[in-house]
Image 1 (tube, rainbow, N blue to C red):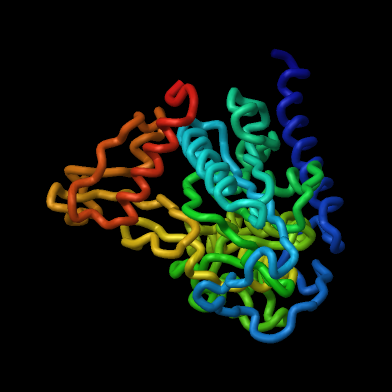
Image 2: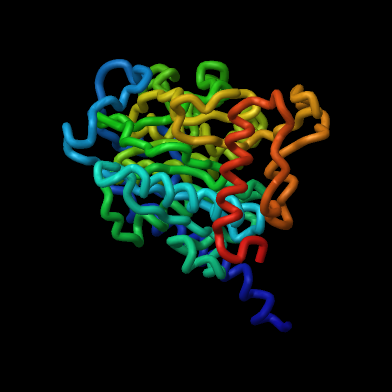
Length: 371
């Protein structure tokens, strides 16, 4: 190709990285430097406007105030996704149930708009079906094979470039199915988030102190959350998102952090970034369930089908071994699930039965399913 062709791609990558850094700097309302957070105590300037215990348990059914008894605080639901078949069919199912549940909620609902943040860098054929913002992916190789690193960068772009009408954001994921109308669970300057048992800041204090220095306070200020599901103020998220991206990239480049956190590294990065910006979270256990471990839907808002559901024909869980009956999203990484999936046998938990019924209803009603 000659010298010009040889120099083109390195130059393109250099310019892309420079653009990312520039966008990160201008996107935050608090002063941000180009270095990664945690390397020195002077890298960032944050205000401590949250006082008291940073982790507050929301009472069961904590959103008992009716919509007509308080001002509606609308939130916008945002889902990041690639253009893979795997992510796309999940987004189509997710958006079907978002619309149906929102419509059922009536005029008092606090569920606002919806956006799929597509970080493939180009439109796809579902732009008319699902409201979509096209974000650019990270430059090639920057995610080091950990595609989730595109999520915070995609949020940075969306928050910068879009006029979001609502004052709050619900960060959700393609493999979430909304079961019932979600109220705005955030309040009093606090976000609202689901607590994950495997996010353990105290256990990894030595590693986390690189990113959350001791002068910021106890490591328990870092909530046991990921970025999803989280409801957070829009202006707060505009500050958190660039830090979240920088911390994610820094952790991925840090062998100790990468080994400690593995596939949940980006979740730890969000939890750290939220704490750095003084945004604590109400831990809302009723936010979602995760079949097959959670067996009843109850009064939860979201079904998160991250785990495979494997059962024998007597309804006994055979986790770790392929079941005679199974539903696992990973079985449909190259083609979407067919319409009218076989229902589970008697004895399978209600949560799994509900999940399959809801997938079947969505695929039966979404036009051109499987195309």
